[in-house]
Length: 64
Image (tube, rainbow, N blue to C red):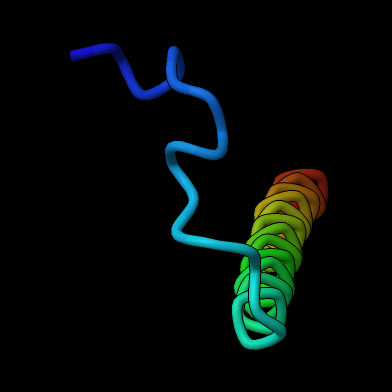
């Protein structure tokens, strides 16, 4: 049996795409994009917190 990528696209499809298939695919892509953006925002926020705490520690040591 040929590998998945070796078969023509028409062998893999179960008929033409229906509007509901397209809407579902768009929703899935939008959801994945939103998760990616949230993940990046969390990463940036955590990085800022670490930098702020390092700066604060440095200021405390300068005052001592």
